[in-house]
Amino acid sequence: MKKLLLVICVLVVTLIVSGCGSEEAGALNKDKLIVGVTGGPHEQIIEKVAEVALKDGLEIEIKVFSDFAMPNVALAEGELDLNSFQHTPFFEEFKEDRGLDLVSVGKTIINPMSIYSDKITNIDEIEEGAKIGLPNDPTNGSRAMLIFEDAGLITLKEDLDEEPTVRDIAENKLNLEFIELDAAQLPKQLSELTAAAINTSYAISHGFVPSEDAIFMESSDSPYANLIAARPENKDEEVVAKFVNAYQSDEVKEFIETEFKGSIIPTW
Image (tube, rainbow, N blue to C red; front, side):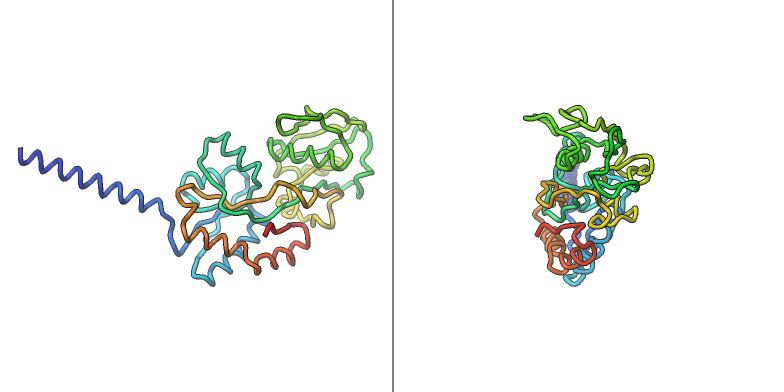
């Protein structure tokens, strides 16, 4: 009986220690964060954020991804501490589709989606039957449809319950053909199209300067603000607040305004 009690006590102590260890393992390193971004502007900005954070004793390890899916998956699986690459509608839809438990801990920038072309220099030059490219993911595709309407290319159905798609076009006077492609491929396929709506990060990576090269830019009051994402158990940690403060600093804001010349807009 004494041996049995001893074994039980050992098991209880082991479970308690393991439980404490798990809780501690979930906390973030107070001196270093691993942050995921996509290549291009987000990478450039986070490099500047890392400089600012280091002055406050916080080291930032940057991991760069080439697509819009893996930074969220990597964050949810614990490979990253934070990520910074996506706008709010995409974030909310991706979480729901993948069943991920992630939260926003701060807003960052707006990357105005714009329409580009290597064949024409003005949106009014688009002719009947032209091929127009847009992202094939639901969130950015809907964003593109709204931009096409703002540009006067189409009219969308009224009182839509969901984000618009190509099926929700009410009027297409020019009989435009809309080609849905992976967002990252649009700049590379532009030669096959008359024009395309391209995310700023991919446009800049391709060598475009949005404020100079776009034939139509999304309005600056766009609801598609980008954000910093975290796992919910870490959202109130001091180190996360320190990172957000570094991002939303005057120094980073000045860098964005100088480096991107209005093509990217700080939200603070």
